[in-house]
Amino acid sequence: MGVRKDLKRAKQRSDLANRVRTELTRQDGVVREVRTAPLASAGDGGSAADVPFINAAEDPDAVVVRRKVGRSWQPVTAAGFAGEVAAAAKGLIAAGLEPGGRVALMARTRYEWAVLDFAIWAAGGQSVPIYATSSAEQVEWIVRDSGATHLITETSDNTRTAEDAAARLPQPPRLWELDKGAIPELATLGREIPDEEVTKRRAALTPDTIATVCYTSGTTGRPKGCVLTHRNLHAEAANTVELLHPVFKEVTGQVASTLLFLPLAHILGRTIQLACMMARIELGHCPSIKPDELRPELRSFKPTFVVGVPYLFEKIHDTGRATAEKIGRGASFERADRIGVRFGEAYLDKFLERGKGPSLGLYLAWALYDLLVYRRVRKELGGRLRYAISGGSPLDRRLNLFFYAAGIVIYEGYGLTETTAAATVIPPLSPRPGTVGLPVPGTAIRIADGGEVLIRGGIVFGAYWNNPEATEQVLDDGWFATGDLGELDDDGYLTITGRMKDIIVTSGGKNVSPAPLEDRLRSRPPVGQCMVVGDNRSYVAAVVTLEPDAVEHWLAVRKKPQDTPMSEVIRDPRMIADVQKAVDYANEAVSRAESIRKFVIVEGEFTEENGLLTPSLKVKRKAVADTYAAEIEALYQG
Image (cartoon, rainbow, N blue to C red; front, side, top):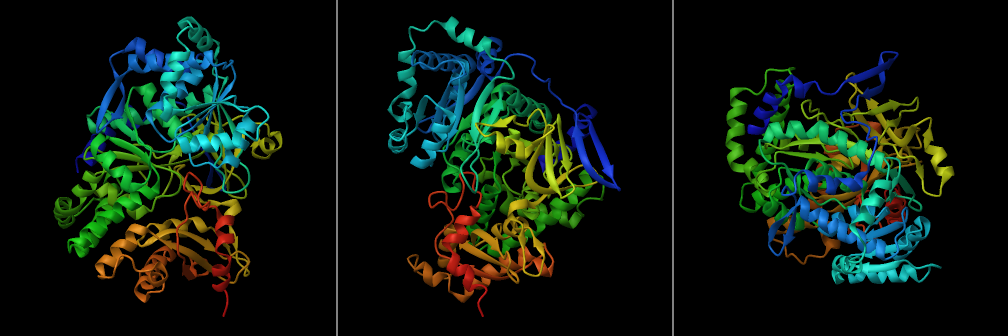
């Protein structure tokens, strides 16, 4: 309960509670636009390349990174990090990187990524991230389109993919591999380059210099390269730090630290890394977002906050449920879940001064389940975690309240590659589960006549690389048309209601946004991934996969062999009934006409490896529809 008391104390400090000025514009009594004033300066000089060197000059002994060496996390000081960045930058210069040249990085989230990102900038270059899971065709397209002259991979598998891609290019990029010593090789290569050359190249950069060409993961078509400047990165990172960090320091009373596990090929991971470096927040790296691989790293690193996606929080909740059931306390977890939601709702009402708060009986029930359940959830996340930021897709409100009761406040946000990551975030002293918050300071959100979300501000990109036609389609007088549908409430908080291109129109003319249904359905075990269908059909249906861990637990509880064929599991009436409960929960959020009438459980999973998910875990709807065309057709027969 400490985090909630600390939030209340922080709220009482007017300098923290009233820091962001918000301006609302109404039309016919409805909020149509909201603007927030910036908290950080616009960045009239310099670039992101300066950050490591400023840190080294101002506080050389400050720990800025903790690097995993063996089983322990070893500190890296500001001076040590800047030295590695400078050495790698000199190596890139020696390797022929010209000012304005582009270097592609194809690797998972790891320490060397941070060194190279800043080194590329310090050498006057521009980084081009590539997901480590990309195919040769995807690598070829990004390298060809961006004109990258250098490519750094992580593993031998990545290198083989890159070599396959390079063989198709008229001018193959120069290749290095991290697992074969790319960083020390660059340091050796650049030994003859004077420090003054790096200083000169950094000095030549301005806020409007291109920092990165970041390709969208895209659910359809070829990825487009978003051109982001150092000013874009500064507007995002500096304003986010100024909004959140002072409050979080007050809340925890701890040295802030985070374990970064989001892909650094995704712009959110990059801006979080930059923000941490700017604020000298201790940062660690983990290469996997898979819960089973991530949880041990969280327990050993013990971060005070994390930035994740709903999938992570869903699976931590599901693991807690499965663990409780294994030791015969499944009913106890269910009660803890219900109590947590009620307690979180009541406490939040009190915090926001719109209710009396939990009753004595509810407090006592919460205290009991804090001993039995909630503390175990905190332990799964390292034991020191007090707050989290969730983005990528909406987080189920009940799940948010459950974590709130467990002492972990989750702030939702919303953004795109074109907005340099977060365009909105929940204000730290005004949580409102179910929304994605107010605009990041210095940003404006407008709802167009058709319900589309428009965004304007320093975070908005300037163009798609080599694609003026696509740029003109989404940028108009500085406003970026997101393609997402949303609503603003009376206080300017944004709720995302769906994506325009995903809207299902039934044969009866009913418009259905699949996102709310899918998000709620996915939040309940044993459902893994899912996709709602029904375009030009008489009703809405769903394709559902099962979460492997949930299936393993389901079989164990029923004393069935773990090698039971999946074809048998998906046809078991008890499994169908369990999925029906998840469908019923999803349907509670919509009208009868929008509800899921039928579903089919399919074998296998939607994964990035089989081409059914993007690297940011979004469903590739056309690919799923093509893969399961026969199963979808069967939903509408008879």
